[in-house]
Length: 233
Image (tube, rainbow, N blue to C red):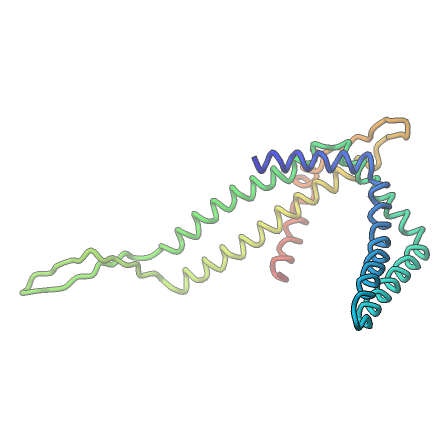
């Protein structure tokens, strides 16, 4: 049920991004400005009913000054703000025309679950690697064995194997994240540079080309970058 709601919310978000991205962007900016002014007015009005309204006046003026500085920043950076809104609107167009891109993170999620299952089995095997010993005692020349058993392992070898497995977990996790991002990036650039018009003709995104480029041309680069991230992390 949770997965179904997540898919529904995602599709609704994509539709809103496609149809109302520009309006929602301007709305969010203006809401912040209005909220700062409104909070200032509300605090000032509530402070009038207090015996000492100094702090209320201080916070109200602070809200108004912040709103003024915010408004000045918006005006001074209006060109950059419009450009960022255009980027958001373009992103909405991309998602609305390439809904199949949602399957890429799902695919890499299942790949990570498969890898983690094998990793769990491997670390369990290494953790129980060693010689099984059984406690015993001798009474009247007869040796008796107890039900208690324990494993004697080569501590240095197992420690190196465990360290290798933990590093491998981090490395492969970073690799799967980077591979997922790479496929989405290739899909995005193929859509952006495809033929599309303002009269309704949609762009074409080649999602499978991302997988092809990843395996054929960039597998080593992504793996090396993931290794560097694993060491730094």
